[in-house]
Length: 537
Image (cartoon, rainbow, N blue to C red; front, side):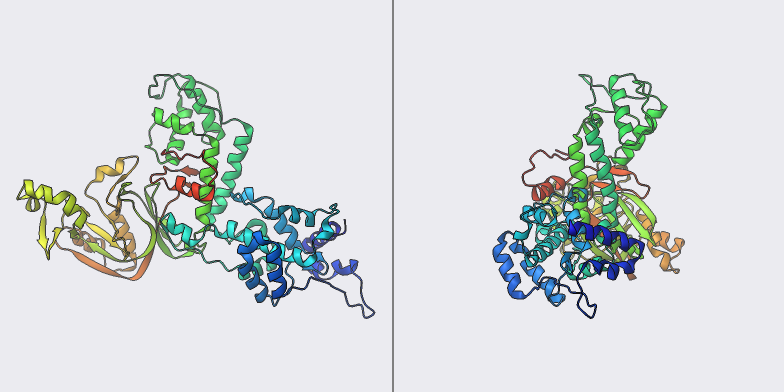
């Protein structure tokens, strides 16, 4: 029990007095005549690293990173204090045994060997040398960091068409941070995008619900008729119970009468799921509620994975625009606050809006719309053949061999557009089709992002330019003349894809998997899981 006793004493003393870890804990070790402590941390060399990975070939993928780790440490031991494993080694072992809390499933090579090292009663422990243990723990550190802190690599992200900037991770720098502050490994704080930790808390809640066996099927009459306030039905009692266990209702009266209390709960549920905010309970709503909780848990895990790819510094910027495709929403964040929150509509499944980031460098008031060649070939040519006056009647004209629509209230881009250079030639813009923002699933565009509050967004972005008064902006948006304005300070824009998101007030939101990206990511992360279905299948 020597190792266990040492660690308990070390940890207890460390939290009472940090200097304890570097003084009193050595009392168990022998000393020489000058009272110098004798230590025997395992010796590591480049040759011993090569030999280790020949012996433990299943860890071969981590050899390059482990070798770089020891080179940066001048080949000194990382996981030993004297002849015993240090507190970080024990903490790493604990974290490896609880990766379910991180929303990942990790297959750990040589897990039996690792267990032997930390099993104080194991008789076979002596079979593993301290040098092998040292390198085994370093390999496990790289394995843990890759899965929990980094997620899938950039090449895999490209396969699923995620072009937001990949978070950069230095294993050496991260390890230095953990050594100086063990809580980083204990809580992972500041290592990952803040949304990750919020989803992690919700994951715990949903797993507790799963264990409680309270996620029971909601009964539906056959044939089903929409339920409205004042209706009476067993379905209503079941819905009431479901809303109670997920937190949209504070109490479960078990009543099968659709009362005021249930109306408030239904409204909360619908807002959290990007549904039309009314009190009608349709068959589609009940079908959604009847999704297995295991699928809800998997959706949370998939979005925790996406959070691993996001640099945690993103949200520290003075201002930025974030568009979340599945929620059909845009947020303009200034100094940590939501300056503008707006509905958007996005590309259809055939003309998907791309996941990427850019820099908004100009705003164009009363823009021309240059019709894409694909639209000319597939739509306009036929209409022009049928009606010679089609272009003139729709405010269009030929210009340099291209068709463009003149500025004005009927222009397809509305009265303002926001440009950010990108290879996909997409941008954000106003829309003359305001009624489309009233739809639940807003997938109507050819790939660009149509913004309901486009004018408000422009006004907000122009706050740093006092010469651009409201009157000047209104004049520029009159539809008379195209007026571009180049921003002196570019504004970052991030177009992401999150089907599970925790709001600032702590509410869990689930959004439709409009492009089936959850399903594709699940196949990539969990190839043996064939049961998961998103709410769009």
